[in-house]
Length: 140
Image (cartoon, rainbow, N blue to C red):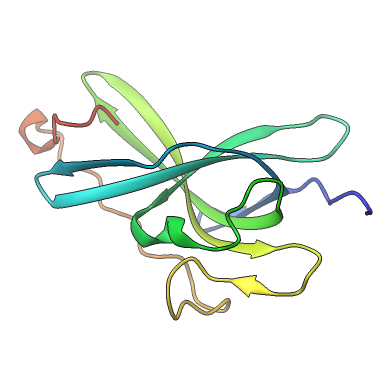
């Protein structure tokens, strides 16, 4: 098997990709907030290059149900970055929105009906500067 490209592309803030191998799948986390029930699956991907990078990527809701999200799969993941302020500190999360198996030519969209030509979902608006607007049930 030939090594994967070790690539993290940042052509613009709405078009980011990482290529690598899934080395860990963390247990799904669920909860309830002011907007209803939620669930999140975190995976860890490792790039293959001279300077190996490991990145934890969160898949929210049904985006974590993709069959491509299996241990040891070589994948390309489209993602976006999201930062939130909580109690004076900033927390950044890498949110995956599409995953494609590498080397098989088969794309597995993480949302039903999501086509590869579509843009990522619109970013979630940042909460107002008022601390009352922040959901205190989750610190990130």
